[in-house]
Length: 358
Length: 178
Image (cartoon, rainbow over all chains, first blue to last red; front, side):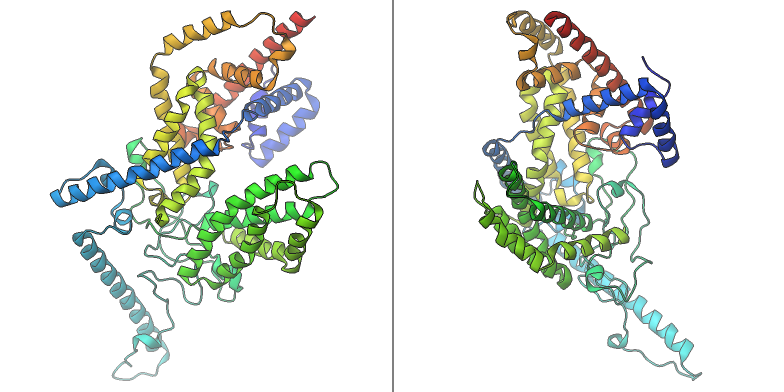
């Protein structure tokens, strides 16, 4: 038997009700047995659907991955032939020109020339903007003279340029890359529309080095209506080689959860070996991502982030290399090092900084 | 030596391939044997489109959208044939199996598939994306290509329908055992 509130209960368990509505629905639950039964049934159904197992055949999935990666060699060969003949493939058309241009190592001469010209123009434009700003400041502060002082570029404490991308003075950024419109929000937030443009008005010059490392950029507007093939008709300003801000924040969060879980594991408990096995597997996944993000941070000159990831990496390696049946003596040295390095706190600071920035 | 793009793609693949496979198996029901092919095809398209050309987080939605569309094509093929095949399999199922045995893990999986298959495809897809992938209604709407309010209705109707079916099934098993 269904009450009129049953649909609201369905929304409630999905977290899709506004706060006030959720409060009313929860109040209704205390008074309505039919809705309580419905809620239990919906949650039991959820449990049954999620109990359907994930595929765990690693050999098979590795085989699939390798066949996909191998397909590119053939495609690249075909693209090389088509570039020589002037023909375009549908795949090449779908990609943004920026993504195609930055897909190393293959550059056509025309693409390289266009890129170089665009880079020069972008640098010149930014330099012109800086010059104007400095001249205006000098004109405001300096005494009236017949001739305005000439301000040399190196005297301007303005944005630092890196690869043609400027950012607000005094703040470091994760995104040391060509485009200004880097998406910088976690997964859910990417669905929100945000302003275009450079810089974040909320940045503070006196932020800590770790917070500076995680100051985000506003994300571009996303297309609203999508079709199968044109879904990939993405914002053309999104460059292909940016450091994913949301990915780093997610990685930090997951690493923190892993270390907490590992630190809190009890050797005397019955599920200890299974717990550690799970954490070992998570650590292996995080390790791979950590290596990539650390290298990217090093390439971008983001020292605070690189330090954090460098401190984390040996711990992930040790956890990933634990034996199948670990004992207390296997786990204790790692736990001690986590505590000695204050890794969990360090990761918490990173996560908090990233959350505030979003 | 693998390029940086290939490394990122491999990482993305390892993270989402198992869950995409699961989604497709549940979506395709009796045709779950083709789930592996559809999953591979979907990842292949993503690979050639270029993972790094997507804004952060968007690649996942694109992937599920493509996968679902490929699965719809498969569902349209030979649907009648597989419906009949399902009836034949049911008829040949050993009558000696008790309800308790039917609720063993592998049977429960088959029951989940059969239950899901009884739903219209859009309700099934919406429910799977919600329960298995934890997507919000807004995200589901983007994957399926419908409005958010349609997703709300579909998820609720799917739950209501499955709740009734499961209740009837448990009552019939209880009657058999009793």
